[in-house]
Structures are given as C-alpha cells and as structure tokens.
Image 1 (spheres, rainbow over the protein chains, first blue to last red):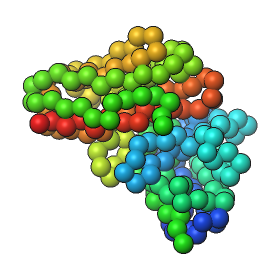
Image 2 (tube, each protein chain N blue to C red):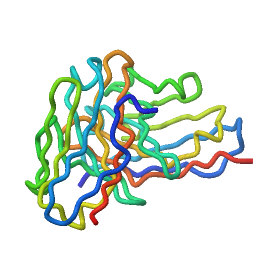
Image 3 (cartoon, chains in turn blue, green):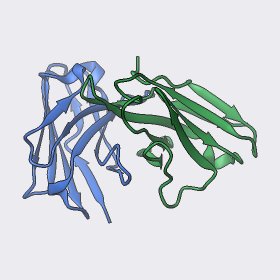
Image 4 (spheres, rainbow over the protein chains, first blue to last red):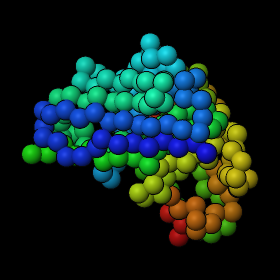
Length: 117
Length: 110
C-alpha cells in the first residue's frame, strides 16, 4: 500500500522558516517524480513545486520561487520542502503527492502550516 | 486567479446529468492531458478521471471525461447524493513549466 506521511508543519511567525518532510513507502520512490501541493483555508488547490527522480530538475510556482526549495533523499525515501521568508499567504495545508498528472496519483493526508504573529 | 477556469458551482437533482467545464489555453489543455479530482472537506483529493477520459478502477461509469481543443469537461450522469464534492481539473502548462489546477467547482446535489 502506498503511503505518504507529511510532518514538520506548525505555527511560524512571518519571515520565519519551516521544513516539511514526507516519508514515502509502498512504491519505488527513487523512480517517481514528487510534488508538493497546498490548499489555503477555504480555497482551492495550488501546486507548489516538483522534483524529478534524481533531484536534478525542479520546478516552482512563481509565488514561492526564491523562498522555497524542494529536495529529496532517495536512500531515505523522503521528500522535503524548505520554506523560508514565510508570509501569511503561505498559510495552508501542504500535501505531498506523486504521479499527480498520471493514472495512479497518491496524496498524503496533508499537514497544516500557519504563518502568523 | 487560476490558469484553468472552472465554474465555482454546479448543481443537479438526483438522477440528473451535470457537466463541469475546465477552460485553458494552447500551452496547457491544448497540448497536455487532463486529470480530474474530487475532494471532500478535510480530506486529500482523489482521482476520478485521468488522461482526459480514462476512469480509474473503482470509479463508477457514471463519471466520464472529454477534451476538445483548449477545454475539458467532466460529466456525471445519474447524479447521487454522494457525488456532492469539490471537483478540480489539473494539467501541465508547458509555457509556465508548472502543474496548473482549476479553481474548483463545488457540486451540490439538491
């Protein structure tokens, strides 16, 4: 069974940093593109970033470029999202996901990040 | 404002057929396949259609998808109360190099 489990969320002040982690199991992590998707309270889904199998190729939504960094450790079957210079508008549930645009997507349960003073 | 445009709401009575549209451009829907997700409050999205018109196993054949040019549609026939949910279209945008989601459509079964 595919499992994606996010951790590292919580309350952080504006301008602060947070690192999200996603532990993967049940599929071949090292051969899968991985994504982060977020959803602000009461809002729709917003794709944040993705990373290729080896970590050499990354893409970001414009609003997080230069502030967020996606990375992975295939040996640990883990995906990360380093979030710096956080803003109130980054407040959201963050989902780890794979195969988003494919036939067998999987999503984590999501983790809440709240940016507030 | 989303790159893909969906109506914010749709509704129908049990047994009816409803259609949810997703309008994009040549750089996204025009060149790439579309997935459709539904999402219940407090839960992760779940796939209902992939590759424009393919149904994952376990999704009833009441759900169908189509694509024409720069637009895609999700149709639900024989509407049931459990279909009440938020629905999102998603695809790749080759000009922006990002995954794009529609703004979402809240489907209400009256």
